[in-house]
Structure formats: C-alpha cells, structure tokens
Image (cartoon, rainbow, N blue to C red; front, side, top):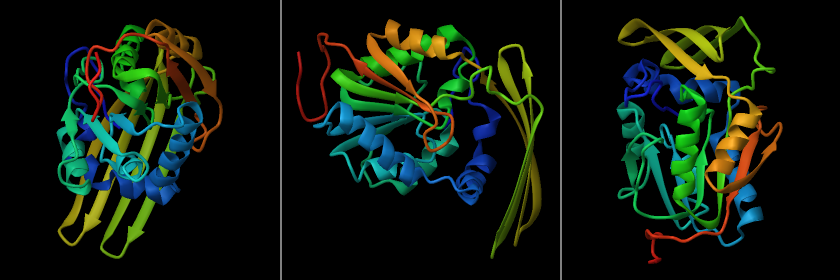
Length: 264
C-alpha cells in the first residue's frame, strides 16, 4: 500500500515496522477483504482481457492482494518501496515470488504483464500530478498492448470530509489495538494524524503516524492514463466505496520481455 511521499525515494514513517505489524489486523476488523477485492479485480481484468495470465501488483504492501492474485494468474510479481511491508509480503508468498523493492515512478522491470494493479489508494501518496503521471506511465509501460491497468484512487476533492475523525478498537486473545485518527484538508491534500496503542504480553506501546495523500481530481487521473497511452474509465463505488480506474493499453511496440514469452 505504500509509496514515497516526496520527490526522493523516502519511505513514509507510516509504513514502518510498527505499522506493518498491525496494518492488516486493523483493516480486517473493519471488514476489509483483500481476497474479495482481488477476486473482483481479477474479474474486471478478465472482462477486458480474457486470456490474462500474468499480473504485477504495484505498491503491494504486505502482499495480501498478491497472495489471492496468485490463485488466479499463472505468474504474479509485486513492487513495494517500504522495507517492513515488503518483508511481510515475502514471508507470506510462495518462495521465489518476486517482490521488487522500488518506487512506482521509476520502476523498470524489463518485462511486460497482462495486468498491472495499484490498489488501496497507494497512488494518492504521490505528491503532485506530475508524479502521478510519471507513475501511471511506468505502470502502463509494463503492460502488453491490450493489457489492463487497475488503479484505486483516494477521495476526489469534492468527496473528502474535512476534519474527519476515525477510531478502531481491535480485541484479540493476545493483543488489543486502538487506532484514532484526524484528517484535514490543506490545499490539495489530505493530512492524516494517527495515534496507535498496542497492548500485548510485552506491555503497552504507542506510536504516531503522519500521512499526506493527494486529492487528485478525476480529470487528473484520466489525463495521466491518456498520457501513458491508455484508454481509461472510472467505475464509481466498488467494494471500498472509492471506485476504480480501469484502463487498457493501446496497441504499441514491445521492446522488453513478457514472463515466459519473448517479445520484440
């Protein structure tokens, strides 16, 4: 889920070791199902590209989507910039599964895929429309012609609730986790302040996170897809309520290889 929040390759503190430990637990308690989402995205991909057999998941986080994608595609790989999240993905996925360390704006894997995904609002952590355009272009460049790119946005400016308060309390037999958040709009971005408390047999620990997510417009996303050589449309709603952008790469010449198939 994580990407750089500045022009360099700096990993946000929000995706460090403490966050990675309680990340899935908290969102699953809310009812999020990475498995249902991956199955639905698979159906969306296959509706556009029935023979899709390979998939790249960009900003794959702990690999929860990727693990389910691996059940539906012959070949899957991931990209993740945050070391703690990437390590959890490597630990959960079958040995040999490639989870590349990389920034979505600069990735060059030297191969093409039938589908590329970027889910759980990861693209919103890019700081500017120019960064969004660069990232979408890189993702599209990893697609075969006719390949499908699926991107889940953050809220659009007109949908964001300024001053929103969030709260979660997760009780498990061996652990209690609380998460309290406050988000505000500053210029064209969401600024999110999160306070975590984790209690277990070792004691009680607390940590704080600050996240910044760009409030890109629908038009900025669509312009980025068009600049990357993709025909895109927005599907409102979806399982998370934020919708999905679904894009198809226009015909063009391939110069790198597809997993299991050489192209020129």
